[in-house]
Every structure is written in C-alpha cells, then in structure tokens.
Length: 260
Ligand SMILES: N[C@@H](CCC(=O)N[C@@H](CS)C(=O)NCC(=O)O)C(=O)O
Image 1 (cartoon, rainbow, N blue to C red):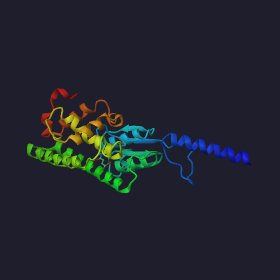
Image 2: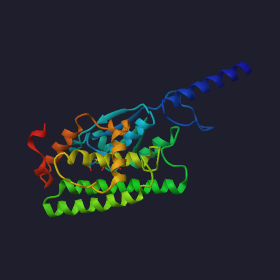
Image 3: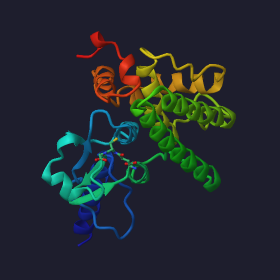
Image 4: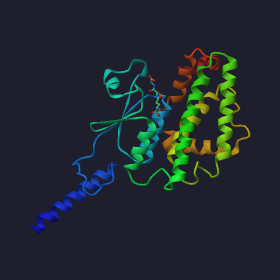
C-alpha cells in the first residue's frame, strides 16, 4: 500500500514537472493534473502589433506554442466562429479560447513562473494604465498612416508628440519602463516603436527629438531578442507595402522601389 502511494506520488511529481517545464501552469493543490500539457496556439496576423505583444510574452516566458497566421482581409470561417470581435490575437489553449491581447498576456504571465508584472498593486495598476496608453498610441499611428491629407497627418503627428512627451516625463528608470526588469508594459511598447523604425526610413517624423529617455528605452526594446524577433524577417517590406496601399498622405511618401 505504502509502495503504491509512493509510486503515485512520484508519478504525479513527474507529471507536474513535465507540465510546468512545458511552461503551462502552477500546480495548485486540489487541481486535477493533466497527463500532458494542453496545446497552445496563437492565431496571428503578420503585421498586428497586438499579436506581437502575445508573441513577446510567449517568448519571454519560454512557452512552447504554435502560431497560425491568417489573412484578415479574408477571415477563415473557423476564425469567425472562435473570435467574438473578429480580431487577432486569439489564444487557443486546448479547447479554450482567449481574446484581447492584454488578457492573453496576463494569462500567460500568471500561469508561468517569474511574473512580468510588478508585485506591488499600485505599480502593477500603473503599468496596466500605460499598456492602455500604448493601445491608444497604436490607434493614433493607424490614424497617421490612414490620414487622407497633410492637415490630418500633421494633427496625428501632433498627438503622437504629445503622447511621447507624457512618456518622457513618466520614465523614471532605465533601460526598461520600470527599471532593470523587462515587463509586460515593455512588451506593449516594443510594437509601437517598431512602426516608427519603418516609417522613419522614408518619412521625416522627428518625433523623438529632445526625448533622451524615451529614445534610450526605444533602443533597448529594439535590441531585446523577444521584441526584435516578434515579427517575420520581411516585416519592414510588408509594412511599407501595407502603408503604400492605404491611399493616404503617408502612402505617397513610400518609395516605389522599396515595395516588393
Ligand atoms: N483590443 C484588441 C485589438 C486587436 C486588433 O485590433 N486586432 C486587429 C489587427 S491588429 C484585427 O484583428 N483587426 C481585424 C478587424 O478588425 O477586422 C487586442 O488588444 O487584442
């Protein structure tokens, strides 16, 4: 009897270890132990900045997963059935589906060791607020590349200047938002700054002039492997092509020869 209990205990320990090595979850007492880790799949789009947040989190937390890229201009029927808002990213965990990047990133973070959120509730809340701020900036960037004329374009640039000034005055530490440790808030801003990396190649934005702290943060994020590798190698060419096709003020600045 004792031998059987010991044997079952050892077996459970192995299963917990395999499960957590696969990056899946903390074992909580009383929780049923799955015999193998659930399959994790990220439904993605090559240019989506919200997908990049999830990819960065998956990479930072070493979570084995598969990525499925879909065409948002021709959404597959299975995707429409799974995505309440028809948007990527979607995270499939076995039979379960999560949507909204912030929720996905927090789920991935909470179910693996070593949190990417600060422990102190006030600091954590502050980071969450700045993640929202990053989403707002993404909306303004979309306004910039869709701006039909110069006046609208300049208006979006002014808004971005204002947003970046707020960032500059709220960055107390280096190299990352909260200091030495890379956090979920950093995962949210990496994709924001990546837009400027591509656009600045053909359009003079001058958005970071006089912003030393934000510029240094932007560079640190661009160097971070999880951020750098969150997109495919042809991302810059794809983004230029996407912008070119908007028929916007910015589209006219994309040199024809840089589009594949
Ligand atoms: N709030 C969402 C935004 C996701 C989002 O806007 N995804 C875009 C691509 S970047 C999308 O799927 N758009 C498809 C559509 O609206 O039809 C999140 O954080 O996940």
